[in-house]
Image (cartoon, rainbow, N blue to C red; front, top):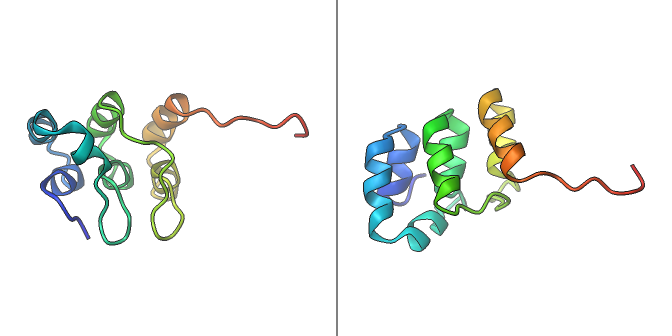
Length: 101
């Protein structure tokens, strides 16, 4: 359910188009959510577009936003078997380990 041109570009891994769209209004574009509350990072992560994921992180994409199913971009990368994206997102947003674990 992509809602913006950025969402569509992220779905299909069009890195150059993503770069062009982000030049216009980074904050609005990166934070925009679809009806299912997916962000551009959700779309890129779920479809395995590593270069787009890296670009979105560089542009300040929120890494821990949950969609309507309570999935973060990291969750979607894991579910879809995109190990390289799981690694990049894990480094970019390390999980704090509690003292009890």
